[in-house]
Length: 194
Image 1: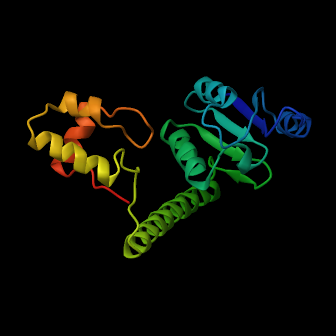
Image 2: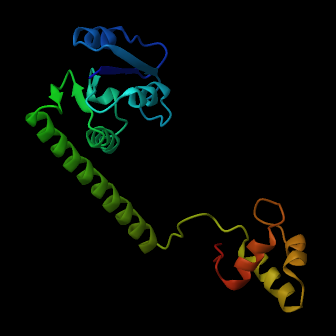
Image 3: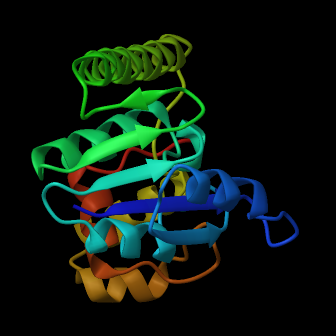
């Protein structure tokens, strides 16, 4: 049963010494580290630490925010460790999932993460509804302006092929659209905006 540690600073300028000293004093045998923002999904030190763990081992961090980039990410990582039979310990918050109290904290953390996800979904939904109620078109801006779509429709009615229409019409970016974009405009899948 190994005790593996993980330390992280947000930049190369910051020192890992405080964290590594605390982890060593807590009995951590092997420490993996990253010097990168916690928001980055690619953290080789964390990946290596998680790969080095086996059932019965414990991952130890100095503080919770060193591990997770958000409450949801933190909760998912700890739940994944738990599923693999690996304990988790945070020194500053005195969380240890190998104890009953630590497992209780883990369940509460999961509930808060789910609550945070639900709130985010509600905020996004409310923002979309508010934008639509104000007449805003959401999503990517159409490639062709209304006058360009009208020209494409006229050329199509005259028997021109989609490829010929695409070579004639220019998009908002000054480039010729693809035949599939022309087809989307002609079928009404792309609604023009002024």
